Image 1 (cartoon, rainbow, N blue to C red):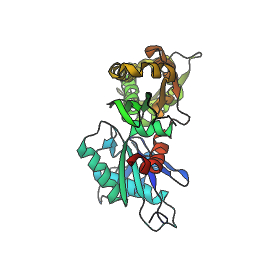
Image 2 (image 1 turned 60 degrees about the vertical axis):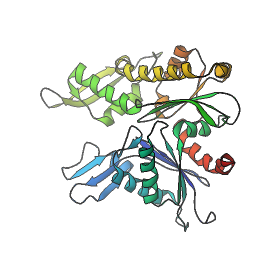
Image 3 (image 1 turned 90 degrees about the horizontal axis):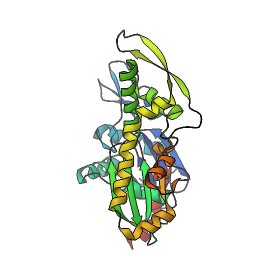
Image 4 (image 1 turned 30 degrees about the vertical axis):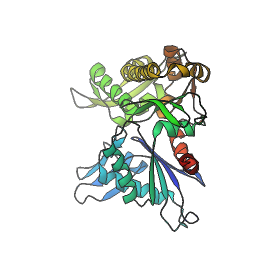
Length: 331
């Protein structure tokens, strides 16, 4: 079976799904979005094509994210999405269903974990294993997690932020909060409503965050023209905003993430203090790419903070590597 099947690691994210093949590396990187016909329930498109439809569909089509805050909100749509992604990722010359490792938030309930496993099996997986996202991120970032020393990882995804201290292949302390990239986008949308009476969509908010968003003052502040709909007149309108304004808009979710990191540090046994001072914190996930975020966390915790070599891919790579480690981990 192993000779003819292709094992896969899946980072089933709220915003993006990535699939890692043990033989070929990252084979899929697409938005976790499904477009469905309201009349027939048929899936019209999945991934990038479906994301382009968000907020722009006719009445009989709905483009939705089947995962919210890192867990399955719409089981049927998730199963169809995973099935589509697996089919797209697996080589056509493979004959058997794959073994799959899926990264999930460490704070999910047993019911939510079972929903993840069931959806993958319904989508055609032969065996399904679930690994905590923070553990997968640490493996993907090449941290020496099997050593008797503390390794701290902060994984800021779309729906959740995972903070964990790992030693000897297990979690010493872990914390999951449902504040991450999506909450940042929502904070930007609310800021435009309150400050400018302007309604903007999720995609515009995300683009604004990526282009001029920051967590720490920039050496040279920037501006951007943002288009939306006027709340009062209902007509299209544009405003020019600065990076300082977007930083102000993002202050609440950023503060929540920093508090989660501090709480995790407070709960970490004193024996790991020297390790963390020496090794610092490793950041992964799309949210870690917000400019100035590592510097702000370093200032707030007095610890060195490093970005993983490939922050966006760390969890997916970690799930794939976990497949290789599986037999050794079992022993």
